[in-house]
Image (cartoon, rainbow, N blue to C red; front, side, top):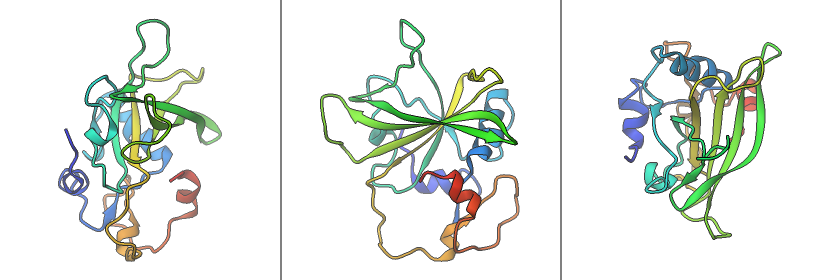
Length: 200
């Protein structure tokens, strides 16, 4: 199933045109993934459940819009290989290759991990269909073990180009806070916290 950008961002969420879904790492863990794991209602339906791993039809450009500059957020369940505890990250003609893992801290406590992945095509040294990158968010307990079966992934095509090279107006850069159901005031730049918590 291919996600239509307009349906994905606006019609399914109730968030009006001009706003962007730009949650922090902590918001993704506490307001979305934790609720998903506990079976609680989510703030909005902007994050869908999607199986991104498998042998057929799981290339990112077959699931998401190849030419879109948007970041797509999905919940997915990790699959272990038939033998051992390693995760099977095969996706169609390629695999999601792990790059690094960063801890997510809240009030001096580790509450989760953010893992960076790059999609690599088997038997090819060059990227195909763009440069797809993914951040995988997971909750952990005091013993650093994953909580629940779900992880939350943000995926985008780094090589996708916008329709115009002109800078977007301030309205296009407004950040929507999932904890506040009132429209935010316009701002022309990201907050320092948002900048620090974002690798994009």
